[in-house]
Amino acid sequence: MPWDPSDATKKTSRADTAEKRRQWAHVANEELARTGDDARAIRAANSVIKHHPAGKPKPTHWSKH
Image (cartoon, rainbow, N blue to C red; front, side):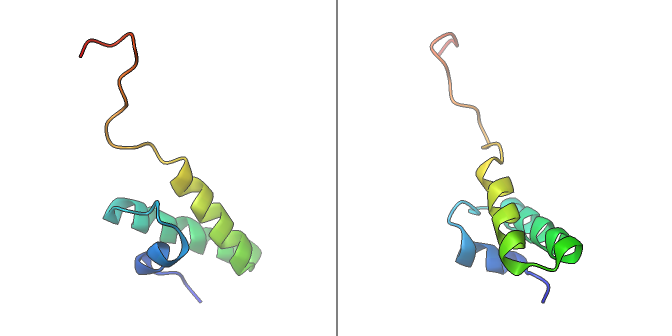
C-alpha cells in the first residue's frame, strides 16, 4: 500500500508542514518499494522528518540579535 502525505500526521507529530508530509510519504514509499517492510518504511520516514532542518535556524550566543 503506498503511503500518502496525509498518513504522515498519523505516524509523527513532526510532519507539521505540507513539505514535510510530502517528504515523509516519498521516503516511506521508497523504503517500502526497496524492502517491502511497512514498519521499516515508517521508521525511515520518521527519521528523515526528525532530522529535517527547521525553517529558521536558532540564534546562538555568537549571533547578533
